[in-house]
Image (cartoon, rainbow, N blue to C red):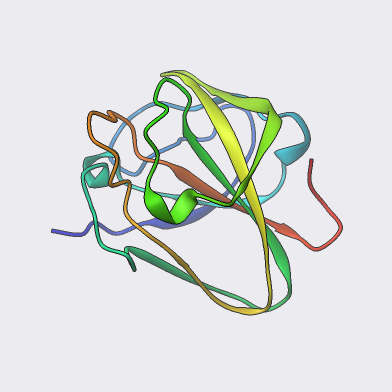
Length: 130
């Protein structure tokens, strides 16, 4: 069962999930950007088109993924791993980034075995980001 996700603004103290109380602690240069507040209960989703978001301009899509796991979803291969991390009250997250033109952005499910936290997608207008 898919849950309802919400768009929010990334800032210290903002809730990370729609179904948990974890929040952001260290947002560095990503603060102020829109992100999708996913459901942590979706962490086992495996569909290739799990999350679709329409963007009206070219963006850099950043995916904050649980840093404790090297086994990442196939769709995340080829994304550029950033040297900085995003801190939340539950864990440290690696940041993976990719440019995307205006239109539909499709992200797959978490699909990584043993991962206990859902990723967080963050959207930066072209020219803004780490």
